[in-house]
Length: 63
Image 1 (spheres, rainbow, N blue to C red):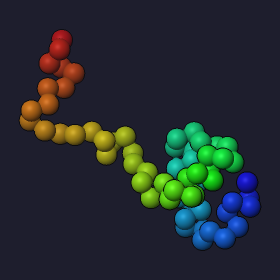
Image 2: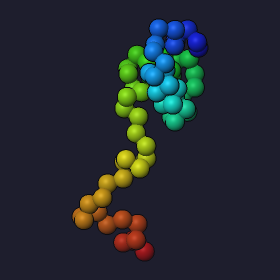
Image 3: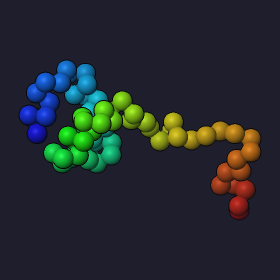
């Protein structure tokens, strides 16, 4: 596992590790995929995925 982080700068390594923990991808293959596809930069919190728009009804509409 440490071999994957050998040539990566510490800031990027932290982002990769945080992404791996966030998506529960803790295997060698999963972390290698995050590194290869540069997925650490596309990490988003669930709060970022919430869309506020007047045309969206929300959970209160159906009760």
